[in-house]
Image (cartoon, rainbow, N blue to C red; front, side, top):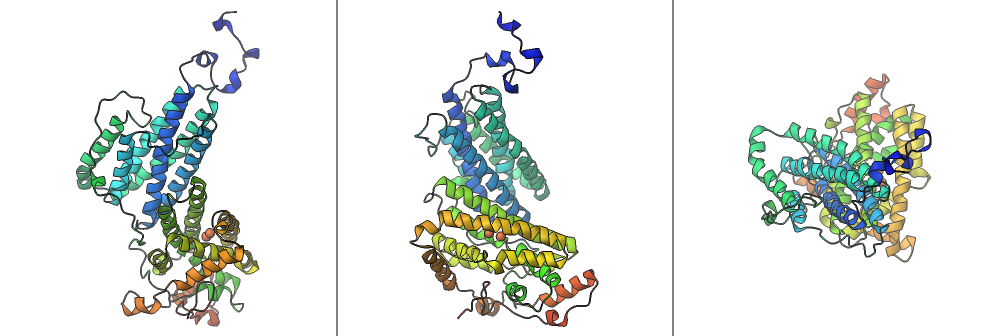
Length: 473
Ligand SMILES: [Fe+2]
Ligand SMILES: [Fe+2]
């Protein structure tokens, strides 16, 4: 039988639908090429993950903070996919820590050193990620569809996820950009493209004699900025004049009134990504990849929790910009503790959310409140926090002899943090205004009910009480 006469059973697509027989008989592929291309993708995605994570803390714009949290997580998942595939191909040693091409290193050094937010967006979403997409598309086409089917799958999955990421980035950039800054930036983005050309493109398959481009912005090596910043909608971010936990655990207040405090608590969680990013940056080389993978998932969950709060206020018709969304927790932790201590505080707080009066309680309150959105969000928030407690048990607790020792360390570290409650007030950074009565009265009007007089006079601050209601000295 001649090759071209071959037929499958009654014309059913052959080869499990992977490709045609004509494509399958083409032998132009080998394991080494597959590995080389995967490793280059791995390098760039890992650097993108690092870049996105490192920018979360000091990027003021909330929509970008949350998007960076999401995109960093996606890159982490993709890095893990590639690592698993590489490990299947007769490697160890995996060689995944090796820089695959100096020009790719230069490219990624340049992007993280971008001096402005639009420059960073242009570098990541307009240059690097389109190059990743091109490399994935070419890998999915060039890899042998049968012999190397797992690689084809990885390449297609990554491209599928990243298309939306690129679309977001390009749109966000257009919202912030103007002609003048675009013109000013162009020589630098051309320089980035030159790096890609010198690397033979991201996948290294284009012949090149272009020399390694010089360092431009990266001549001044990038320094992580651990001080959180917020955009101008976050007014009075030093305000710690309302302690929502005191309200939440007080039995005299109604479930419906408590949903308002829970939406606030959720939105305020944007400080967790700001803080967690500092742990990931500072422990970058001290922890294995799986630590970063899991912590990135957790970081992204916390950004989602913040957005749930945002959605809650929008659903109610309350302008959250009139509420001070405090950032002194992430600020104080980032500026006063080291990465291990911060991890201890995070674990201590999250572990304490697990007993009956923690996340389950919030969900029960939400269900009782008659607000289905609050019930939905608290349900998933609880599930996420169970996952986070497990992540902590995998990556934090084993550093200590016992669970209690691990918890005590976190508690101690938290007690060491100076809240600077009075200092911030004395420096004129905030008056710790009690914003609650105003927002509560507004919500009652929306709900069409008379305010509970006891709730209306609620006035508990963080001056001498922590978020876990422990007293400060
Ligand atoms: Fe959370
Ligand atoms: Fe959490």
